[in-house]
Image (cartoon, rainbow, N blue to C red; front, top):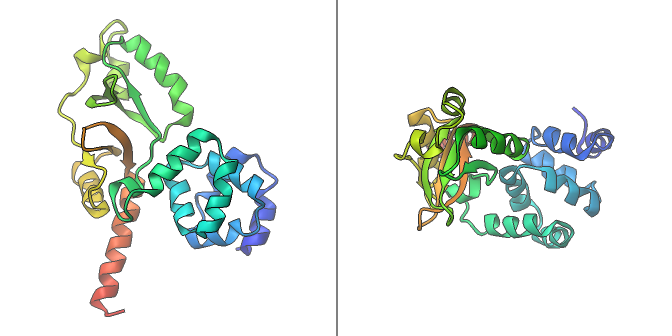
Length: 225
């Protein structure tokens, strides 16, 4: 219920990871209004802690000059990823995906896979689906966390993974992607480029948000608003 400037004053007393988690619950217009009261150094730390899809949603709605001023303050990895994400067309799978997915090679054992997932988990959007890629990042299969836990420790991932993967292309329309997530009841759906390289995932919550936006837009059109 506080105005943006006062809301940030309260939120600024918490650590950046907590700030990012709380910040993601505000509406985008409120977020955009809020960043005006945050100095660039603090804002850059906040942006680094945000998930990649939330981060891009915010930056797309900020003043381009402000974004260009912020980018040099970010770590090289985040800076490169942001520029790439911002290059995808608005309304495409690439614009709504997150790059924080769990992935593994196929030639390791289940025990090794679980150990690697334990390290990946803190920085991933979800680990319930684990995507299997080759050395060139081509998507070759997936395995659920449930299946990993139920399998014997010495079993190879290649022996238990599903090779028939339903995926979407990075340039696909966001409404099509959201409908695919809904159709199959996925927690997330992988996004690949023209060479079938894994570039991100679209999660069920982002898909639900897209469908809500599209339904609202259709309703406005019907009412000639």
